[in-house]
Length: 240
Image 1 (cartoon, rainbow, N blue to C red):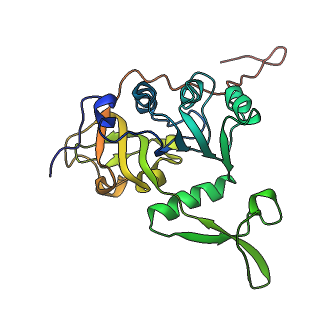
Image 2 (tube, rainbow, N blue to C red):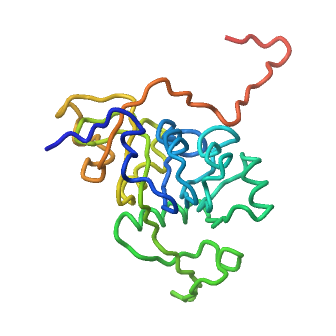
């Protein structure tokens, strides 16, 4: 089996990025985002992108970088409340938004990766989310039809990988990455550590390498925190 390893993010994106394509980008907030691949996507200059991601990063970091350069035409997202440039572009009519309940977004991606074209859910019935969608009754309850999502390219972040693309995620950085890895026609993963073939416990592999076409090893990750919250000690309380 051939190695899927590329020397850097620019090389991994070469030949697959084009204007107008659909890109899935893993992560939840700023946790588990493919920092290096997002930066390389910005550097590529690809325009009019449709980006599927739980959120749009923050101003100046994550997918927020692509908003600043106006490379994103449409976002398919769940939570976008941390990005003022996103808000400005959307309210000005410069950015299209397909808004999804978070669980619906996750299931649309999972369905796309599993080859399921659509599914019915009660989530969103009677709200703006349901407008224009097929309604159907099951056992006296109304459901709406949601479609599966597939991307031209999925970019994901993992903790460890072997050269064949078998991936292991770390704790909450797992989030949307595993389902997105299955739903990209081409999936490119960036990882923090590359291990020897056979060193990963097969029972602990989260994404089998069959889903991953290209792989890079990144360094010097920022891993920013969106909202850093600390507690002020009460008077006389000892802080350890």
